[in-house]
Image 1 (cartoon, rainbow over the protein chains, first blue to last red):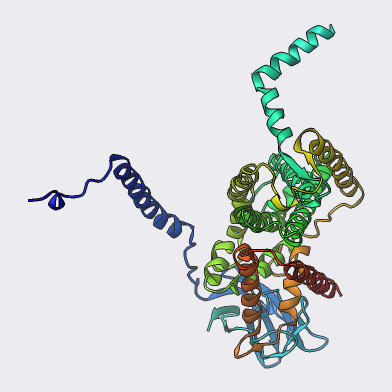
Image 2: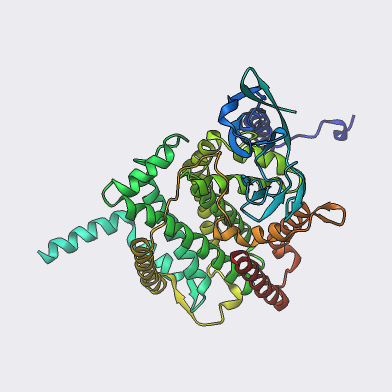
Length: 146
Length: 345
């Protein structure tokens, strides 16, 4: 048996280097994964239908912005009934407002315009407003995600 | 009396190792008239000013959505010199970002990113990203209607960043929506995570600079001055002027708070992001709905991110530092100023 068959010796310094490097990598993975999971906030669960007030608080032709699931929601009462939309502009999420004067929904940030059925009809918004369902139950106005 | 004073100074100098320290600093030479070095020193000084004034503000600030605005109102309206400290902090933050941009810009046009300064360039850019993060999170803290809108629009920008956009958006908001969690996140980042990261990056940036006897080898043949005392004295004079400017701005140009955040109120008309986001804001405002079959805003933000990556990789792309790079840098600056100006109209 020649010396070629003997296992190659790893110098002590290299071995220690590999051990330290390996341990550091193991610690990085063991600590990194929980860290990333911890800093990723949990998804928000919708709270279900929300009572936003009494029917008489919403005169015909008026609009009000209420907060549902921590999101602003625009509730408009027309002669035909209620419409509710997410009040977040689909352009850059500024909060939109109802203009009774022009009978349309407007984003004041960058002059985005939506029709009364939430369609984007002017300015930079790329999509219609998200619609929510509104029901009236025993005199209370209830909003819930569609 | 005089001898006693000298002895006392000598005692301190001996313990500080003053003579070898000043000798080492004097041996380090800076090209005369290179504005990038003065801007670098000024940026570091402004960071320290912000840390000091920021610590003072934390004595009264309350990072809670229900109390934040009132606490800032109290700082600016009821605490003695509170308005000055607040205004000083905000103005020094604006000047910090401006000096950081200018520092990197002059390094770019002087092609100071060339070997062996690749790591200095990269740490400088990391400092810029962290500095903008610091300014942006600070902008949210008053939890005014403007801060609320900025938090919304700013985190919406982040959504368009390729690959990590959705994660970044939720991370910045502390959830799916802009809520009190967003404020707590911004506070944590503003007072702890970002300053700690920026301190490390700045320390590394300065450490890398001291690894060479002169920071710009190709300028060594030009006239140089020793770092100590010549550069230090000039820098001290510049910093005095900067302090006077900040004090003047803080005293005569207050930063109004506006009204408290209320998600039920529509966003302020013509809402503008902080000035350092004006160019990207204008790009998004003018973006067509679709570009090459992709959402227009996503397309343009992706292009801006790609441009940022190219700038970061400059030392490896343009190894010799061609003059065309300097010309392109001036053109880019001109375009950014033009975009920012058109955003204001």
